[in-house]
Structures are given as C-alpha cells and as structure tokens.
Image (cartoon, rainbow over the protein chains, first blue to last red):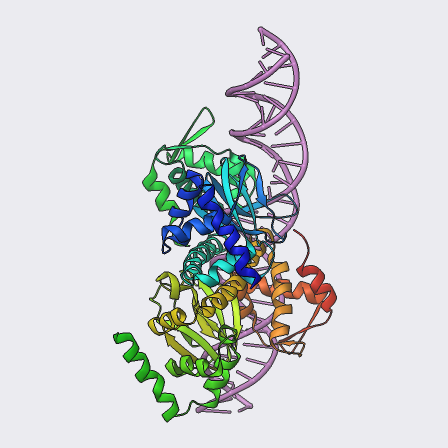
Amino acid sequence: MLHMRYIETRLQKPSESPLSPLRRETFDKTSLFTTLTPEERQQIAALAVEKTYAAGETLFFEGTPCEGLHVIGSGSVKILKTSPSGREIMLGVESAPSSVAEVPLFDNGDYPATVTALKDCVIFLVRKEDFRRFCRQHPEVPIKVLALVGRRLRQLVGVIEAVTFGSVRQRLAQALLQAERESDGSVQIPLTHEELALRLGTVREVVSRNLARFQAEGMVRIVKRQIEIADRGALQGEADTEY
Amino acid sequence: MLHMRYIETRLQKPSESPLSPLRRETFDKTSLFTTLTPEERQQIAALAVEKTYAAGETLFFEGTPCEGLHVIGSGSVKILKTSPSGREIMLGVESAPSSVAEVPLFDNGDYPATVTALKDCVIFLVRKEDFRRFCRQHPEVPIKVLALVGRRLRQLVGVIEAVTFGSVRQRLAQALLQAERESDGSVQIPLTHEELALRLGTVREVVSRNLARFQAEGMVRIVKRQIEIADRGALQGEADTEY
DNA sequence: TTTCGTCGGTGACGAAAGTCACGGTCCGCC
DNA sequence: GGCGGACCGTGACTTTCGTCACCGACGAAA
C-alpha cells in the first residue's frame, strides 16, 4: 500500500525534528482533536503547513477550490460573503484555537465563503487528502467536525433570521455587543463605521445614522471617533427585540 | 457490555419479521447509507419508527429537543424559520429519499428550524442514541452526514446572499423556477401567493404586485389563479441578476 | 343558487434602507 | 505647522417593503 509508506515517512519526521510549541499547542487545544491521544495529535500536527497572514489579508475567496483544513493557531478571522457591487455580510468570526473550511473538505466543492484575517494570524493548513486519510484512521474526528459544522449552521440560521425579520438597528445592536465580547473586556469598539456596515450587509451612512440615534438615546457614547457602549442592557434589549 | 445485548435483540427482529418494502427501499436509496452493505442497511432500517404526516402537518418545531434522524420515505418537506409576528422564511426543501435534522444529532442542541410536510409523508425516525451508536460502528456514515450537512450549509449561504443583497423580485423569480423544478415538468406552479410569500420571508401583497409585474412583462401567465411560467429564460435572467 | 370562506388585486400610506453629494474632522507625516 | 488621506455627519431624494383597508373573484358545500 503506497499510502502507508507515505504516511510513515511523514509521521516519523516529528520525532527527528520536534514540532514548534505553537503548532503543538494549537492542535492540542482545537476542539476537533481533543479525543485523540497526544501522539495522534502530533501526527496530524506534523502534516500541516504553517502560514502567516497580516490583518486584512484574505486566506481564500469564495468559489475557489479548497486546499484543505485551515486551523487557526493564533489571531482571528472573519467568514463573509461579498456582492459584486462591493457590499459584504459577515457570517461569523473564528478565533484561535479553531478552524475554518471544514465543509468543502467533505463535499468536494469550492469554498462557500471568503475568509479574511481580522488580526495577524498563524494558520496551519492540513491538505485535504491528508485530512481525509486521517479521518478514515480516526473515526472520532468526523464526529467532532460535525459538531463544529453544526454550530456554524446554527449561526447561519441566526443570520438569516436577523437579516430577514430584523432591522439594521437591531443587527447593529447585536454587532456592537458581539464586538465588545471579541475585544475581551473593553467597552471600546475598535471598528470603523465602514467595517460595521460590511459586517451587517449594509452601507456606511446607514450605520452612521443609527449610531447617532443610539447616542442620542444614551446607549452608546462616541468620543474621538471611538464607539463605546454606554448602556449594555438597553442595547441588549434592542438586540433581542422579537420581530 | 450492555450495549451489545441491546443491539443484538433489536437486530435479530428483522429476520423474524421482514421489513416493509418502503422501509427497505428508503434506506437503500438515501445517500447516508449507500456505502453500507444491504445487511447493514437492514440493521439501521429495523431501528426506525415509522410515522406518517399529512401535507401541512409539522414534523417538529425549532427550539424543541431533537428526537432523532428523520428519514423521508415518501413525500417532501420544507425547512423553515418563523418570526413571532407570523412571517416565515424557507431554508430548503427535502424530498424522498433524503433526511432532515442531522445537525442536532451531533451537537446535542435543539432543532434549529421547523420542518413541515409539503406533501403527505412517510417518515422513518431513527432515535438519536441508536443513530449515534450506529455511527460509531460504521465510521463511513458520519462522513456521509457531513457531505449532506455541507450541502445544506451551502444552501443557507445562498439564502443569506439572496436576502441580504437581492430584492423580493429576484427571490420570487428564483422561487418560481425552483417550484417549477419541484413540480417535475409542469410549468404550473401549485402555490398560492401566500405560500410564496412565506417561502420568501415577505408578505402576500408584495408577492401579488411582483407577480403582476412579471405578468405585465410577459414572464409569467396567470390563468384562473394558476401561475405558470411563460418565459423561463427571462425569469432565469432575473433570478441571477448580480446585485 | 346562495352562501361563506379562502384567495387575489389594488390604492394609500409610512418607514426603512440605499444613493449621491458634499463638507467637516481627525491624524499621521513631511 | 500644513498637507493629504481616511473617516465621519448629514441633507435630499428614490426605491422598496410592509401595513391597512377594502372589495372582488372563485369554488365548495349547503
């Protein structure tokens, strides 16, 4: 079996050249591999190619063929869909330790969405064939992938609900609260109006106006072009208004 | 091992009481189980509970706990999300032989959406624990589930794109073409304006007006309250207008 | 045939979102 | 300090949606 030979040569390497701490740590922590033994995690970790992206760079575009599983070692990324006229809508955010592009690994399609770095990122790319082979040898892994994909699918359903039945005002409130959570702890929102608009699938002006309303109503404060949350409770109420 | 005892008792039944033709056929045809041997398919088939639903009945509601995998033996269902104010948006359609509710099987959450029968249906319900146990014994199955969930995830991304960037007019054109495909062959669309509105996440009046426009433009004909497609090409063009 | 319930058409209106345009503000850099 | 680029605020306008209201058309059942 040629496969076996190939795997063995790849898998013996790590004992000769030990894995970087970040690489080891990443594969230890990411949810997909928690059921494996440390040795097995090293095996899969050794297969990955390390890549780095600066904030703003895009990892891949929707509609292009899938290279493999992108495991996020550090930093965070956003998953988004673009329209030809330059608008965008954000489908989700993933931060280390996590992964993106699980879906096209199994249905042999192209990437369904674009992914770009929010912060500087280190990504470990496990090639499609390597990952699928690994899955065959470790049947627990696809189960974990399913759990992850399930979570993402739920997020998507939430987005659909918000876009279909909700207003920009509501989605903005949600986005502000989420952004606050992402920027762990600080009430400051490190996003421009334009960036918020792209997350929401709308345009800058609409975000500006809605933020102005929020400020007038005392829900947010804008000092020196910095958005900060003034009344989390009120915003939360706005966010989960039932349509 | 208690598990083994349990499974054995369940699995011996079929040889004593043979499975119904529909049941056998369903599990032979549905994509999740194509990699199994006929005997294995019989095992899983034997675990299922048969249920029937009349058109319009709902199989389960979003937010309620997941019982198991719903395999569609005959008929078709729609997957949808509702708003408290009575609006709906359709996330997808599944027809026999297929299945719904794969996701909550693996992430232990509630159903993410509601599913109701479009036509009279026979459903085979495989209880969650049974299915998960079966997955552990047959690692090919989760892979197939992943492929299916992947397809659904792509559909969802498509819906998001359509509602975020598109107009009702465009989505209506898409829905008409899709409905035509579902009603295999006939140009007649067996849907009321209200039903179309619910599929699109809008309201009846808006659908009526847009249909009237389509008719004025010669894309559809409405005779005796029956919508039929008059100019498929033009509709298709309308449907995939880039935003 | 009458009746009643469902479905469809349409006008009037208001609210929200998107577009265009332009001027103002902040901030880093020469 | 002044320049320039990115970012923000806002007015004016259009279009699309959704809502309300009401009437008319159709068809099944009495």
